[in-house]
Length: 494
Image (cartoon, one colour):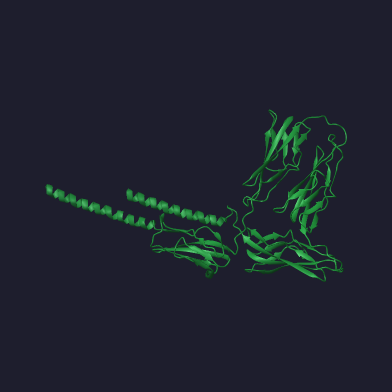
């Protein structure tokens, strides 16, 4: 073959092979383009809003892993709730503002259309008429070991059960809403060990391996703040001394009481409180007394007029509400205590002779936060007063009722008829007007209180399992798409 013919034949083959390679590459590029154009729509996390306040919607629309293109048509709409009370600044913008003019539950939808694809995602909104009350400030747990500064264990090896130890907390933060406890040995004799039946409970039993002085530490943690307390334990061995067995002191404050005050502060004298003992052990042969306050109303405090180390002490309550007092007695070896609940209420001056109108006080307007529907609330500070006339009947007829609610909420009173401090079950978030009415057979009186029930989002980690499965499936779909994309790239390269 001539040289010129060879050159021509080579050019023809080159052209043929070039076209063969170009056509598949073009086909693969088109297929890849389609695979990378799947629409992803995210309407944002569920949220709460207040009437008349603009809220910026935090949403996102993507084409594959790329930002949204101008040719993608997007639109916000209302799929649950009355759309007449919802307005968007611009419903065709992804990140727009929304305003609500009526409280309730709504579902908003973000839709996106591109080529032959139509994709949407929803977001749920709870709208309140008032802004939810700020959360109460979290206080560190309060630890009370319930014993003296030093514990004596007359045995070897020795054990001690902390049956009087306690830890109190305000329940905050809401998540986790519980207190964890940890006992540990802060110091101990050389070569000794301390073991606990369960170091995570406050009323544990400690075992000391040998004689000597030990210091134990207990820590309480509420998820945000912690507190701790120390107690010294001396383990010693003595030969049992014959004689009467030491009994724990007997402490008695009396029955729970209600203090009626017509002025603030209110004074109370614990004249019925008593503590008796058998005089053992000796020494010391005497009791050590100490009063303390376990709980009080928010902002309330108790001042001791006389010493808190006297049995019949006098105190001052600076605020109406519910107080719990504790009286502890220690004989040098054993400790006992008693508690009493004091309800401090504000009353009118004592009525004159004859039948007077009963008096009712529910308290001030309050806001209730609930994390489930329906939600319950116990009215612990409601009270009534009457002079017992006329007689008969010599008693009051008591009746709780719902006067009205803003958006149709209903109330069920769980206790029986005639209870003052009832538990109310509210069917849904709403503003309720409740009435407590009393009738003595001749005169009647009533008091009303406004209760705003507000739903709060459950603590993180409590989403439904079904929602989690949906998220997993979505993730699996995305992974499958990525695998297909890699497979196409490898085919095009090799």
